[in-house]
Image (cartoon, rainbow, N blue to C red):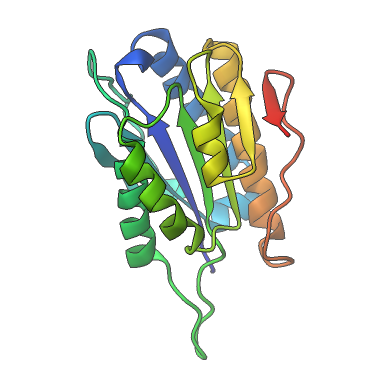
Length: 211
């Protein structure tokens, strides 16, 4: 069975401490249960989560959906937002993990990428250097989420034209965002064979697309 790799980059800098990261943990769990109810997703989706604060870490290596076990994500008490480092780590992971098609074997579907931040990159230079590298990796879709009032859209718009905004960082907004992510992944897993790119479902009311 061909894999659909799904990468989620999560901002875990100090400002996410408290309710925001709690809401993210709850949202991730509900996203997992929604995806597991979809037969297409269950067969094809492999999920990886990269967190970034003072450093970028592979929180969940690329894992088949039915084997994913998530412990709660913790947030340091303070700290920077090294989003550039996260993109560099992502580029390494994708180039190591993606199976290309050969004459004998069909490779992976084009991966999906979701990035969520409540701020802006502390390592702007590294971030800007990493963007062309990410764009060469041929993601089927890159969605960036600017969560809360301090999130800067202009950096995210350099990475992708699909930027969504959460006005607040409460549980309802994050739940809406992760519900939409799971709907997008389901669309991706069922349409992966039909076309190269994925058209995303309309977002819920808590999530606004920046056009």
